[in-house]
Length: 309
Image (cartoon, rainbow, N blue to C red; front, side, top):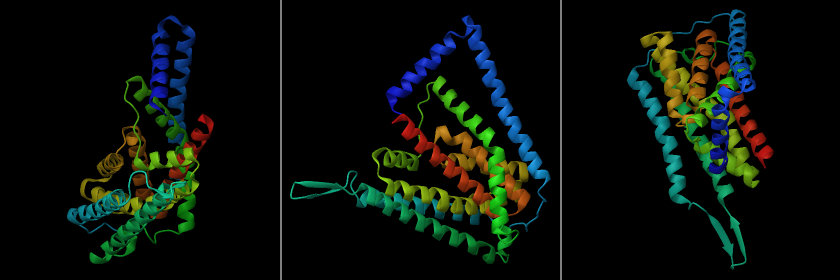
């Protein structure tokens, strides 16, 4: 959303609330949306509770790695991510292009975006490789990370069911946050990958858009679930207990993504993913849930771009 559009929508929203006291119809509309919001939360809570009752609890071994090991894994992921981003920015200019005898100018930005995404994917897989060595270094099997406690297919199917159950609450939370930020004049911000994807779709450059979708739907869920749930959440839950472990890992997961708009939704997603791992012991369930969540976000962005254009 452009700045003029955002300002216009904010003025319309403030005007609507300003006329609230003198218009009973508007009060009725407000009550309807409040009821709808809590109804969506209640529906998701009931569906998740019902799904939990139908899912047998699976216990996995207590992790033996230390807080230092956990921090080293996170630092490795962070540094590799920063290195690929900084390297791309230093090697390639902001508006890369080639020009042939002053007649033909071809932008290289889509190609370089794809290269940057691929480099980030390789860095992520290096992190996963390091995480997979962590149990062995501490004399444990991979089951401590949630691998081998259930089949990939079963875990993926359960992840899809959890996503469907949480969908009403997800929409309600996302929309309410957008309206709250708009009402209080907090201009929306977005992650770099979101801005890149929106720009690629808007300009019709589908090759970088597809590369970004592949990274967000395949690579990022794989890396982040092993790191944030398999390593960080498991250690925090062992050290401080499940409730505090869920809370701390979810907040950290939200903050790391670096977006005010996405902080609460991502933190809620992080809490749900931690609880899913705690219940199922199957990391594939978390990866599938995370993947389909990201795919839904990309699909919404494509729809928004096409609808607004």
